[in-house]
Image (cartoon, rainbow, N blue to C red; front, top):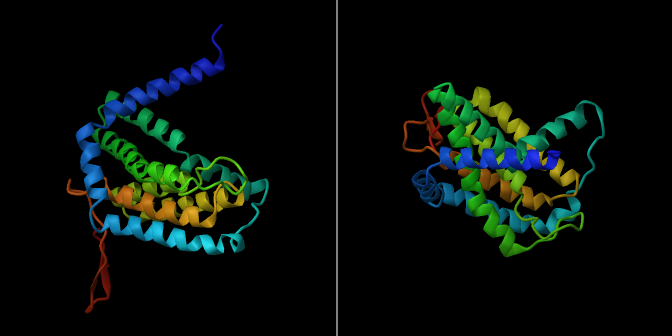
Length: 231
């Protein structure tokens, strides 16, 4: 008899294989170089620095989440949105379907989602192992920075870069609920979330730069007070 756990493991293996094929090693190397170059590196360093300073006020920035109803459902959705495993699995499935249907646009987008998650993990994982900060609920020592927050902001940044802020702003709104939920559940400190948000945003904007995708840089036109975004 096949157990549900075996089915889950098999599904995870299939998703992993799809993700490995979807994200070439050369692309990951290029993403890492862009992430570790200004101005994205500046955003990462700023996030880590501000997060480190914010540890002094973490005790004053705690809250409880509302249970049930629409607020509870919203935070549950945000939890899935920020889950690295679930988001990576969804990206791998979408990439597989897009390849099967020869939908190049969806395939490219799902590839960038996977690459942004990998780029964020490049920063998040070593920091977690180096800082060894205990979670507020007394669990493991992998609190700083918040991986869920980094994943959510990486995904939102990919959506904003590809589709503009009509899609990007709602995506960022959902991403903000992720750290609110993680802090409320005592899985992270406020400072963990600050660092994770900056790392994730930098990772999402690093992926695909130089390949014809819009970038983000504020450039103001004094005559018309308009802003052009490029990063």
